[in-house]
Length: 256
Image (tube, rainbow, N blue to C red; front, side):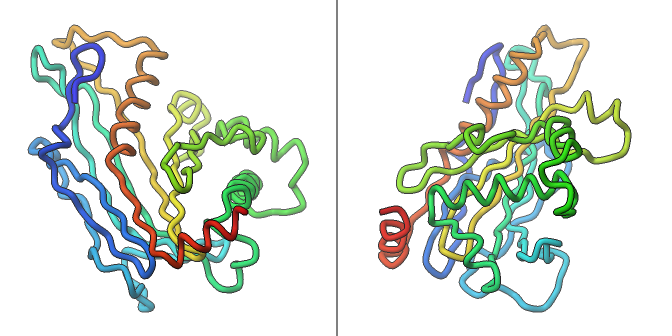
C-alpha cells in the first residue's frame, strides 16, 4: 500500500494469510514477507485448540493471574518509493490471553461494556504496579499521565470490527528508568480482540521512523503519528474473526 509522502509498504494482497484455530473461534490475518527484515520473527502453531500446560519460552503467567501465549512476532519495513530507502519499520506482536476460571467473573471478553471496564481497571493497576493502596491517589494519576494511559473509560477507542468492537489504546510503555528517553518515546498501540468467554487476543504494535540523509521525506510530529496510525489501520483491516454459533449466542446474551 502507498501512504502519504511516497511511503510504500508490503503488498498485503500478495502476503501470506495465516489462520489460527481456537476452540470456538478462528482468526485469519496477513503476515507480510520482508526480504530486508533482519529477523525471522516467530509464528506459533496455527492449531490453538488445546493450549500447552508445560512451560516453554513462548508463554508466561502474568503477575495478575492470566496466561499469555506468543502467536506472532514480526517486523517489516516501509520505503521511500523514489529512492527505495527504508523510512519506517513496523513491529507487530500478537499474543493470546487465557483468562483462568478464578477470574471469569471479573473478566468477560464477550461483554462489550464489561471488557472495556476491565481494561481500564487493568491499566490503573499497571500504573500503581499492582499496589491497590495507591489507586485513586496522585501516584496513579501521575503515572497514567506519564505513560499516556486513558484517564477515563471514554478515552478508550473502539475499532469498528463488526460483531464485537476491539478496544484500542495508545500507551507509552516505559522500557527503562531514563526519564528523558521515556519522554521522547512515542506511544505504541495496544489492541484487544475478544474471542471467547475465556480467550482474547492482544496486539502490541509500534512503528520506528528511520532518518536518512538521502531521503527527501521530512515528516512533522503530526505526520509521523498519522503515518503510524495509517499503517496500523491497514494491518487491522486484514484481520478477520469468525465465531462459532455458541459464541455468537453468548455475545448476544452478554450484551442484550
